[in-house]
Length: 511
Image 1 (cartoon, rainbow, N blue to C red):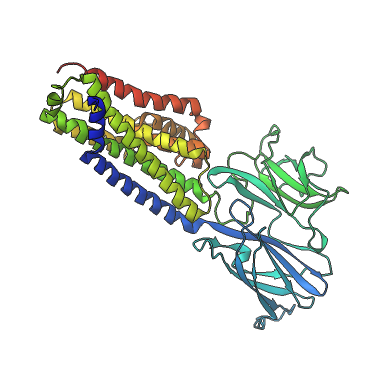
Image 2 (cartoon, one colour):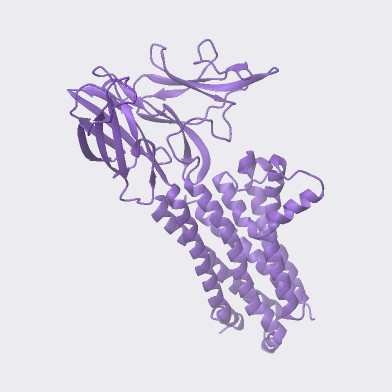
């Protein structure tokens, strides 16, 4: 066998590979724990409407996931308790339910309940669960009591807000607008449109009731029960002293009558508007889960690289076994590259296994797999973190003659650039007298992660999900601070090649 291929095969069969497998199993366990802990935040809520027709009270609830999409298979027990209009205090105790039934949501997520009860006021009690996603939290109309009194035949009582905020994806920290509406007798709306305007009022004054008399922008038509819109991007008027700008939405019919309106302070932007959305969380659970696991992955892949290099290069070199290998017809360059090739193969396999295991478990618990484009990007990011640290440890192995300094240097760099990176940056900023709060510090923290290899996977995850763990609170994302795709790719190449070339140059010189 070719001596260099023999060297690669020898490294792949060595104890270092077993050590990497153990590290990968530990990383996978952390990923499973991360997803499992986030699973209870998976929310299913509902919007709905009620109306009388054909001598029955019709209640239609739309079971929706966090993205505003229908959830089939949700089972609910629905009870109708008559409520009197008595003004006696204290009010009399409620009578037993007049009608109780069990329903299951259809393929569109609709729980249709025709209740044979007379016209009147009813307290509707709903208790629901999803047998296919038992860890989900059912909230709002699916786990509470609410009053319905639609009145005359055909009149529709809307249950829940008309305007709602939902994420655009389970792993994307960007929101969109969901409009919910129903016509007479529970029919789908037709001929409606959604308008927006940007009124300016005096500070502490409320916004106008609608866009009447103001310049409006039509966002689109509403011809279905559920209609999604991108957030409107409206020109912000020049503000005077003590003035506030609002964004006002209004749902208008064909005659120009305003059916519903709602206002939000400030123009729409990166942060969700202050709308009462029918969901228990602000962003999809996948965002926080993936971001958290990415930083864990950035810690474990460098450890895997540490194990490969320490047992495959540092210890053999200190014991003199590398010099024995060089007795054969091989070169220092060839042996170095063969050993590095083994590191690349093992770390690539480890990164792929950990990301795919996370994806599988997230799919089982959160109900949605990672977007296809995320998987190779996360594997590449984890590989960069592992190879960057492997290169640094290789360089240290050829700078020091014994294992002690190499081991100490590797551990110190790993801890400093992973677990303690944020604390180190915080102390450095505070020591200069600068503020460690606000958008400027968040921007500095995000940019600084490019110079710490274990943080690189987090940069990848934050760029993909359009958010960041550290910067989101101040409206700061990687893209907003200039950390775009080109910058991330260049930083990754530098971290892989610079330590490798420095170690290669040192290794090919006679000590």
